[in-house]
Image (cartoon, chains in turn brown, yellow):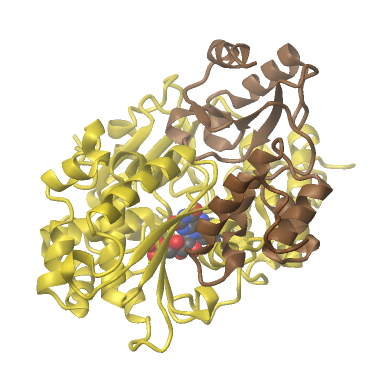
Length: 161
Length: 419
Ligand SMILES: Cc1cc2nc3c(=O)[nH]c(=O)nc-3n(C[C@H](O)[C@H](O)[C@H](O)COP(=O)(O)O)c2cc1C
């Protein structure tokens, strides 16, 4: 690939160019850029997206693949239109996270890491999401939902399309 | 009754406090302006030393001393990395500062940069905190437009840029050297210390890593004086501190409190937290996140300060007080804790990578079947061998709680006797 014809949208490339200015070495912008890239590429890193990212940064594919695998927010498999992250760590567990997990399993037919049949959302158990005084809680994409009950959870998930 | 002392959270309930105009009206950036125009960098460090401030990230290292480790002179650029990875279970306080008073963190960051001569600061915010990221980025933009961040700040020859750097979901990146490795664009592997980051951090240049709340304290100290801060709390635990109360409590929340030897950890749990929600007796407390030993219900009458809780055998750590009552099985509690650490082990050191998962599997077996004869001794032996054999402290963050549960609740881990 030649330097100036990236496989990504010009908006994305412009944003990555801005990110590069913040660091003495381009590589440091990798993780911030990967958030933008994942959003542009349907929420996950296919082999092709890994290769395109590596080319954009001049890094080996393997480096990008390693980063995808290391961080829980990057996905190496397709995900639904939304990602639901339910916190399962101690404070949330003590306030009923296990019951909510079971509720999601039964009502929506998805276990940890699975996507609903209609492709609406991928369900993930997550470790501590930092809202322990408002437990239990979940993130739906970027939005947080606190002091959850099964009813609240249903009204949020029921509203997704 | 124990009362909150609100300094950092004085204006946090005003939704307009996130805007620069309101922050300035409430005295914001006055301390920074004064420092730039009337104080030398060393004066700023001296004020922080005088305050007795100890870092709020969990280890409690004296902040002024850390800054003094930064080499003088300008052979290499210097950096500040603000630790906003906030992922220790039970900890949810840095987010309150970022979402409700972000400039207070930025002002402290600028003061730290001025004190050590750093020209760039990165705020490493965990990727899941999208709301914090948005609010802090907006605050930086406003401060930059007002020439409080950037080149020749307020007409002086001090320049410093600040950028938000989002993480992407990995507890280990809260460990300061892993944070730096991650910020450089890698998997978040911790590095061997020494060299400490203050001497060799980002791109092998001197880097001060401080927690978000530490930076907010720096703002308070320069605004109200090191003596004022030192006069709050008690010896060894000066100032005010954000405590996160969670678990089976009537009033979970983030509270700004002074430490004291005049009241106890139990008093805080009862008077601030309201006791247990169900009224059931307390069974145990993790007083500083889940990385330290558990305290049993009969061990809560220690003073409420770093020293006293350490003497009681645990730690105030990151200020995360998690309480569980006797309706929960302690086998489930310790299993949940081990699941966290085995998931979050970065995989670099064998004792932690293999050990944490082995411990988790053993505790899973205990949960369903109970321990067989000899299991507890084996578990103690394996965890002993994880202690002190790894690059970072994540391994002991599983060893300490697990061993403490086995020792303190022996009835829950009674071995089956085979005839
Ligand atoms: C496994 C592990 C996780 C940590 N996570 C955090 C964290 O999420 N936030 C934080 O501020 N410090 C965390 N720390 C502590 C940092 O390594 C470091 O001590 C701290 O950021 C220094 O800032 P301070 O001196 O202002 O407290 C962690 C340490 C370890 C060993």
